[in-house]
Image (cartoon, rainbow, N blue to C red; front, side, top):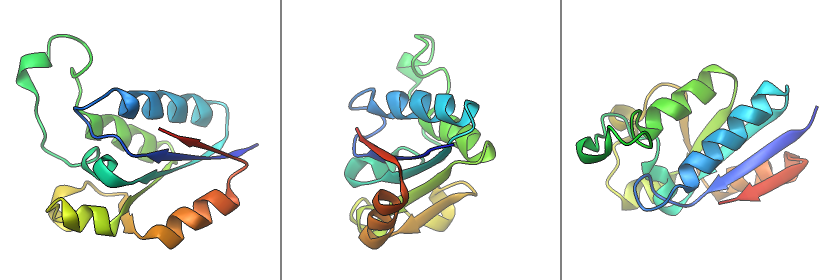
Length: 123
């Protein structure tokens, strides 16, 4: 099977890129592919635990928060790495704000993901 890398730069509430990344990852894992995510720039905010968006919770898009969706992917075998510089710049306290399974890395980890992947998708 293939190895797929997904670079996610969009935040959880500024676009639906996170949802596209989630759906692509879910589909790829379902087909037996290896999936790795690198959350860069505002993408580092996507897996932050404890976020709420109550005004949109009944619309379907945010009936579950992005972090819950990415926790499903991690449970299914996806690798999720967030850029450490992006994490620091956004005031995220990684040990407290990220759920288990979300790793913090740096751009060499992104370079490794790109080098190891058969295909890379940037959102």
